[in-house]
Image 1 (cartoon, helix red, strand yellow):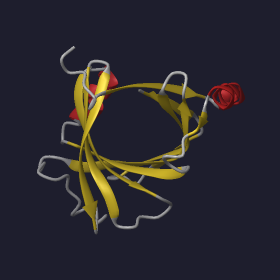
Image 2 (cartoon, helix red, strand yellow):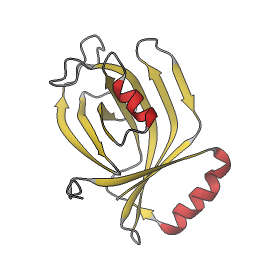
Image 3 (cartoon, helix red, strand yellow):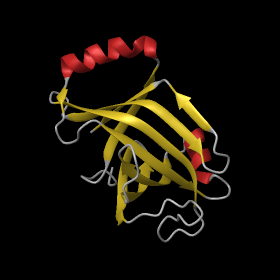
Image 4 (cartoon, helix red, strand yellow):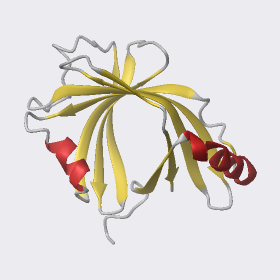
Length: 169
């Protein structure tokens, strides 16, 4: 596949409930080592979409070639630095195009994805992420917990006790 290059990677996600947590953690601790690239941290993403919610519906429908737009920043509180990401999925692989940002303004009335005037911020997703590395498979793994979703136009907050395990290679 000509689209697969060093810029593209495979990402596989698994969603677990608390009943499977100890089994998954046992496997991870027995088969991985801590990845010192990143400390455990809180991840925040503000997702952007158009008025038809195209990105949302393409994700729900499982469209294999799609793009999502987000602003990502880290930590318990917003500190004014982040990264705008255009995440492009082609079949089974993904790549990201990023624009670093400092002195961000989280005033949602003014927040805009760079050069994409048709997109507006729609949801804020926040979770705690732990990082692992499997040297046998040569892949990075993450575990996301304490997931929170806030719909930005209604301010509704949804807390999710499921875990998301992602394998990235």
